Amino acid sequence: MQNENKRHAVIVSERAVGMLVDHARFLANVSEEAAQNLIKDFQSASMSLETFPERNPWLIDSALPINKYRKLVFGKRYLIIYQFKNDHVYVDFIIDCRQEYAWLHQT
Image 1 (cartoon, one colour):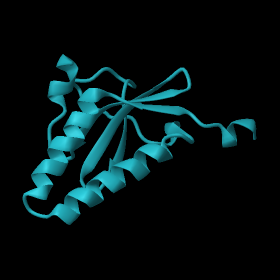
Image 2 (tube, one colour; image 1 turned 120 degrees about the horizontal axis):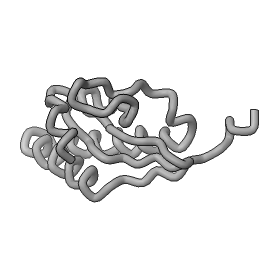
Image 3 (cartoon, helix red, strand yellow; image 1 turned 90 degrees about the horizontal axis):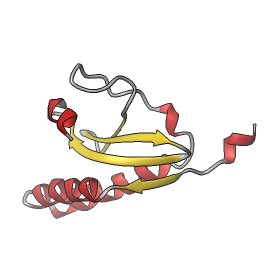
Image 4 (cartoon, rainbow, N blue to C red; image 1 turned 180 degrees about the vertical axis):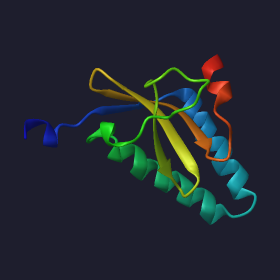
């Protein structure tokens, strides 16, 4: 298959970077190693989106538009929330899975 080896550009928004930094900063208060592992896990997970970003499920929530965001779990309890458009992956948010998603519809 031709598309099997295709690489997609992964673009991480400033907001998502800030969210990752906030999560890592919080973890660093407990364990610096855990914070470093979170960043490494994010890098690995986000790089995996270069190939076949459609493999992950849609983020379904009544407050969100249908089929707008996909989600990828990393670091055991964090989500990369992203959109795949025009051969680009746009990482918009990085949240703790224990958070609610309702606030996303306001962005």
